[in-house]
Amino acid sequence: MKLHKGLLLIWAIIIAMALAACGNGSKDEEGKKEEAGKKDGNSYKVEHAMGTADIPDTPKRVVILTNEGTEALLSLGVKPVGAVKSWVGDPWYDHISDQMEGVEVVGDEAQVNVEAIAKLKPDLIIGNKMRQEDIYPQLEAIAPTVFAETLRGDWKENFRLYAEAVNKKEEGEKVISDFDARINGFKEKFGDKLDKEISLVRFMAGDVRIYHKDTFAGVILDQIGFARPENQDVDDFAEMNVSTERIPAMDGSVLFYFTYETGDGEAQALEDEWLNNPLFKNLEAVKSGNIHKVNDSIWNTAGGVVAANLMLDDLEKIMEDTK
Image (tube, rainbow, N blue to C red; front, side):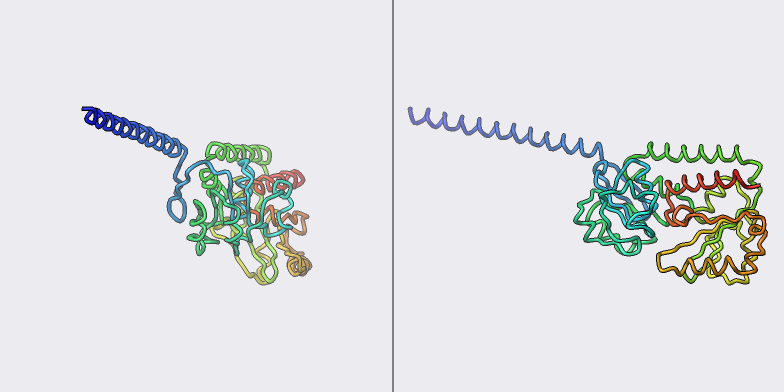
């Protein structure tokens, strides 16, 4: 009888322990589900040039692989942990260097250092198909990766993608609306000068270009509503490798030129040679004094929202003195 009671007691203890374990398992499972629910609540998907990126939460450690993307992040209040170096500068453009202190260099747009990116343990990588398509699988293996399609044309298209990628769509729209407000203000102030034909010329080592509408500066001039010389009023990139015989095609009411000088003096020497050419000196824009050298980084190379606003600053100052 005593043995029978002892067995019953043992069975009762075993059943109680099993029930407790089930209860704890249910609680653990519920906890996991609750935690997963919280994570899913902050996660989001971003459609981009290479597919769809699943981003588990608002990123805090972002690596950016384009110059214009760097400017986008800064304007959104996001300081990247890593970025490709600026095309000109040591290592950043002068107009953003004070905001980039402590940011690690991860190569340049054309040659990204994947190992350096991995060491930074990013939770988001932003790049560009035009520049880095070949290494996309390597980048995606490190962290969620979002790629824009191209780098030419309207900076706003890539900007909106970047804002979505860092979960700041509203802030991004505010940046764009502020810029558009500046454009509208410019139109009101200089409406009587918008019929002036604006010519764009760029000097590079071994290459002289006449820029058309599908360029950084060309898109902004078009949004303002400036006229362009007939041969430049086309929706493509540029006439490249032009010869001196094409100098007359550079004429306009106002001529802006910019020079991509990397430090070896070649681009500057080419600029000097062309500006002293008799054909160039005979351009109406030159003879009337409506020719202006502007910063290549701001008017072309940087390609981002910070540069866009600085370009508007230049235009306002110059158009005030243009008759």
